[in-house]
Image 1 (cartoon, rainbow, N blue to C red):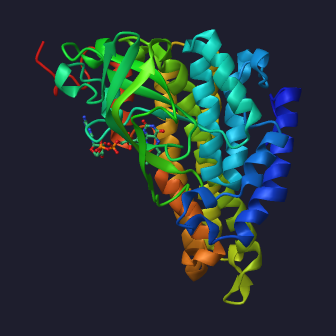
Image 2 (cartoon, protein in one colour):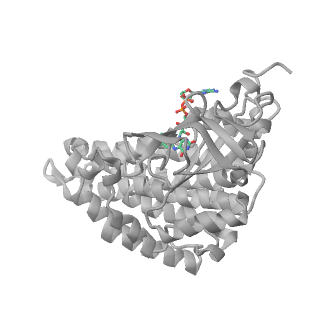
Image 3 (spheres, rainbow, N blue to C red):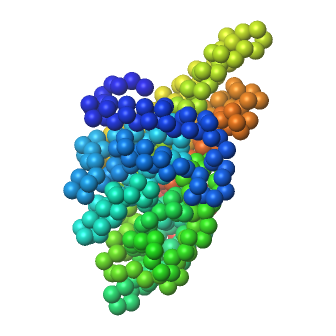
Length: 411
Ligand SMILES: Cc1cc2nc3c(=O)[nH]c(=O)nc-3n(C[C@H](O)[C@H](O)[C@H](O)COP(=O)(O)OP(=O)(O)OC[C@H]3O[C@@H](n4cnc5c(N)ncnc54)[C@H](O)[C@@H]3O)c2cc1C
C-alpha cells in the first residue's frame, strides 16, 4: 500500500500496527493454528494479544482524550479507523472484530451517553485491556431488514423495554452479537412503543454485564473470524436505571454515528483479509514448483494473480472514497458506506477463492492456513447486513420514493 495522502499520525500508527501484526499476530496464528478451534471461548485468544494491542495504542480508539483515550484528528477519524482495521485484519480478522467493536461503540457512547456514565465506562475500558463492548440489535425475528426499514409496528423489535418508576425493565433476546459472549458493557435496542413504526418506537440502553436478569446464553461457533466470540443474550425482567437510557424512541435514527464508521470498518477489515490472501498467494506462486516451473510462470496462474490485485485495488479505491465521504459528512456518505461494505464482501471472497485454488490441495489443509482466509472472508457477506439487504439500502437511498415500496402498503 502506498503512503500517498496519509498524515504523519496515520503513517506512524499504520507502521506500529503493521509491525505488531508481522511480529506478533501472524507468527502466533501460524504456530497455533489449532487455537481458534479451542471449544472454551475464553481460552481461544491469549490475553497477551489484547495487551499487545494496548501497547501499540489501537485498543481504545474512539475514546475521548479527557477519559484517557487516544483522540484522532476528527477530520480524518474514519479514514484512520479504516487504515488501522485493515492492518489488524491482515493479521487476524477475528481479533480485528474484537477491537473495532470497542471503537465503534465508543463513538456511539461519546455522542449519546451522559457524561458521568462516559466517565465510568470509558474508565473501565481504559484500565482493563480485556474489556470489550458490544452492540445488540439483531433478534431471532429481525436484523438488517430493520434498516430498510419497514416502518410498521409488526416489523418492530420484539425486545421490549417498559418504564417502571426510575428504571427501565427489559425483556427479550438478541442473537449473533459480536463480543456478545465476553463484553463488559452492552448497548441494547428495545421497543418502547409498540403502536408506532420502529423509527419512532425503538430506544437504546446501556446494559452492564452484571445486571440481574441478563444471561449470556451461548457463544456461537462461527465459520470464520473465530477469535471474536459471537454471543446470544437473554433478558428477563432486566432492570437498568433510567439514566442508562441512551436515546428514547428514535434510537435507530441516532445510530448513524455507529453505522457509518461501522460499514467503513467492515469493508476495511474485509480488505485486510484480501491483502493477506494476496500476500500468501504471491509468495506461494513465486516459490512452489509444478510442471518444472514456479507456478507464476504458468500463464493461467499469472492471470489469477492479476485479477486478485485488481479486485483489491477496486475495493481500496471505493473504500477511500467512502471513508472520506463519512469524514466530510457528504450527502452521499450513507449510500457509499453500503456500497463499499457490499462490494468488499463479494470481491474479497473472490480474491480468497483464487488464493484457495492457487494453493491446490494445500489450500484446504487446516495446518497450512489458507483455508482460514477463505472462511474469514465468507463471514463478511453476513455481517452488518446481508448482501441483498445492502443492495436494497443502496437503491432506496438513491430512489427513496419508489425503490422497495412494493413490499409496503400502497401509497
Ligand atoms: C459474525 C457476525 C457478527 C455479527 N455481529 C452483530 C452485532 O454485533 N450486533 C448485531 O446486532 N448483529 C450482529 N450480527 C447479525 C447480522 O447483522 C445479521 O446476521 C444479518 O443482518 C442478517 O440477519 P439474519 O441473520 O437474521 O438473517 P435473516 O434476516 O434471517 O436473513 C435470511 C435471508 O433472508 C433475506 N431477507 C431477510 N429479510 C429480508 C427482507 N425484508 N427483504 C429481502 N430479503 C430479506 C436476507 O438477505 C438473507 O438472505 C452479526 C452476524 C454475524 C454473522
